[in-house]
Length: 352
Image 1 (cartoon, rainbow, N blue to C red):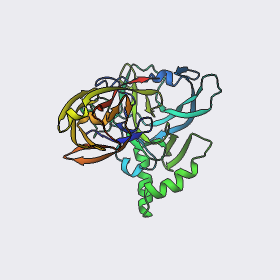
Image 2: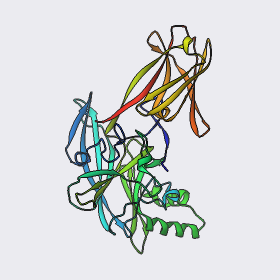
Image 3: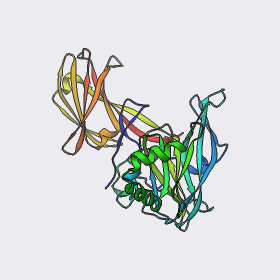
C-alpha cells in the first residue's frame, strides 16, 4: 500500500502531493537533492534574487537498541510506533546532525534559518546510492510520479527514534491511562523545545537510554520523505529526512479550450503527474463547475482566463467519490464567451 497524503502547499493555491525529491519518472533511488552538498557547511547557491548558505549542526547522539528506526511527527507517535523502516541498522549510538538553510535577498545579511534536512550517520563511507526509506507496509514500486512515502507533520517538527523506545514509553503511558499524542507530547516534548533552538531530545526508556531526537521541519507542516544513503556494499551510511527546502516545483499551463464549446464535455488529459479527466459539468453566466478526477488531479488545478486574466474562484471544494478525490471548482464573476479553461500542472521538480 502507498500513503497518498494531500497537504496544502502555501506557494500555490491548490492541493498537491508533497513530492520533494522524485524528479521525473519513477526514479525512486536517486533524489533531486544532492545530500552530500546539503550536508556541506558553507555550501552556497542562489535562486532568482535569493541566496542560500548551508550550515551543518550536530545536535545529539541517537540510541538505537534494536536498529529499527521510526521517523515521525513527535505528536503522532501513537500512530507510528509500529511503523519502523523495513531496513534496519546495527544497534548502537549514532550522531544526528541538521542541514540548516540560511537565506536572504541578494546583497543582504542572512535573515532566516530553517532546517532543510535531519540526518543520522552510521559510518564514514561514501554514498553510492540513495533509496527512499519505506516501512514494510509501503511499496515503492506502487508509487506514481511525484508521489512519496513518508509521514505527515502537523506541529512543525519531525523526529527519529528506535521502535523499542517508543514501545517502552507507550507502555508507561498506557499504564497511567495516558496517550503519547496528548500527555507525552505536552508533558515531555513541548517543555524541551526552546524557541531559540531548532532541535530537542527526550529520553524514552531509562533502561536502554533509547531517545527521541526532534528537529524543526522546514517551513512547518507538510508531508516528508526519508532516504537511505547506501555504501557500495549496500550497508547504510546515513538516513536523511528531507523537509522540502532544497527543491522547487516547476509548473506549466495547458489550454483546454473555450468555455462555450466545452460545456457538457469530458476531456482526457495526460499530465506528468498522471492521467486526469476534466468534466465541465454546468455553467451559467456567473458559475462554472469543473470536476477533475484521476491521479493527475493531485498535481494540477483548473482556472478560467478572460483576456489573459485569471478569474477568481471559490474553493476548490474537495470530496470523495468512488475511491477518488473529486475537485469542484466554482467561479464567481461574469464568464464571457471568449473565456478559456486552462489546467496548471506540476511539470517537474528541480534542485535549488
